[in-house]
Length: 314
Image (cartoon, rainbow, N blue to C red):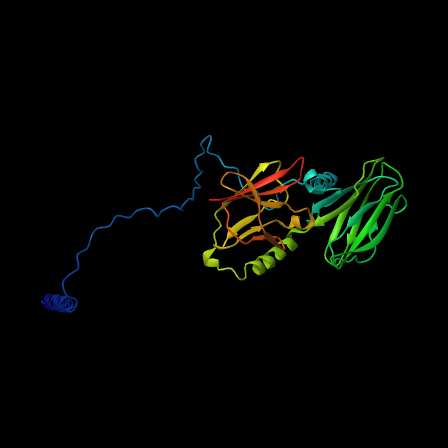
């Protein structure tokens, strides 16, 4: 009997505790049955290869250790550079017996000489030689230095004469303005009487200054550049005008710098019937300044093999 009362008391206390726990935690949670699954295996990385199509393949870029360009043999590179930089005389550069080269640093200017004849190398007026000209063969070549004056400015000359034909050497001339690299050749009779240069960079600076001087009193709002210039007879001359314009009263014809050391052409105005008429004009540096307007005009130089350049207003 005692055991039965004790059992009932235990059940009553247990029930009270369960009711108190439910009141404190709220509604009873719903449980879901879970099945145990095996742990996942380690992930394996797979590298995908790009699809290659024939005709759509690109050459891989060279790495730092690969040669991008295979250099040639040193002597072949040198020979090719010297061959490319060699400047030879041509008919366009000749004025009478003087050959005029365009000066560019690094060019090898070819000068042809002959025994018993002197070749005159003329430097730019105002240019002075620094030190002695250096020749590769001072035994079989004779060199001298002289001076002249051009428009009051001292011009230095280098005189060259070989002792026999069939020689070849080099000459380096250093001045206060630049360095000349020259190759000398000797022949039995063929020789160059004189060699000089014209200097495009200097000419450009001079042209800008001259143009500012000539057109300083011109109304730029009235300038007309509507002129055509063409060769009517002969080959294209070195004095071919580079620009023609007017300001409504005067006509300006601008020539290249080469004309400063060459014979200048004469200017004729053409009438409506095509007859030539002399016209008054003034020479200002590289400009012909004509004190009138014209429809057509011609620049002429020479007698037998005459060069004619026509200027026509559009």
